[in-house]
Image (cartoon, rainbow, N blue to C red; front, side, top):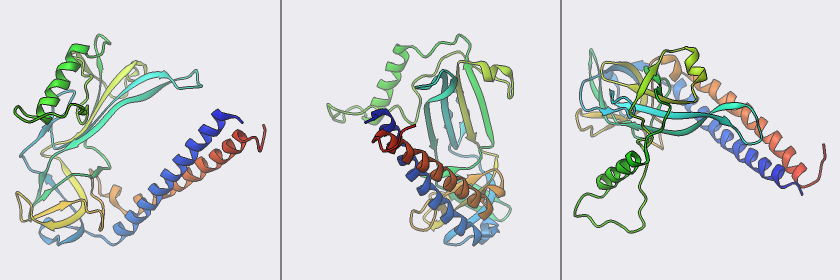
Length: 279
């Protein structure tokens, strides 16, 4: 028995199932999108909708690396290293996370609250890439300090803390060097930097398209747009094309092809691992 081949094959089969599930989700989104038409905020009604507007000034959250005011952001950090079994250097993701807060979308006809929980941003309006000038990571002392601050936030003073409790590093990263600088888009430095930090965000003043479920009970407006597991997802993008049936259909096709490829490779590796076939 070839154990490495067998384990790798099982991993490929798991990836195949994951991609197949994604293909089914994208196919369902394609069907939903095909039944929608872009409407002004005034005309949206309970149920799935597609609308657009500008994000109104209000409550914001700060991006972790630069403290930029936003309503929805994604961060990640990559490090150039060799993957197992390869001598080629690649950018491997070592940290990532997403955070958002409710915001109000407005157009010439009205206002509606958007609750981003569980939603997806198809395309962020803003992004930046950064590096540490010194190339160093955040110190252990700084990380411990941040962990303690998170622990105090999760368990305020006076609240009994479980002895075996998990201190989450999400949605904020712990490794934030104090000498980060932005890299110019497309510069050679972006390709050659050993460790990079990324931010993508949506902020007040941005004009965006939103696909989601309209319901009553917004905190700031009579209606709200949210994700509903039974009737549909929540998507935000800078362009309407990202939320069309064609776009979701293309995503589904890519996922189907990836699922098939992973499945074939996985089956071959499993058979090799069991000794059924040899190469």
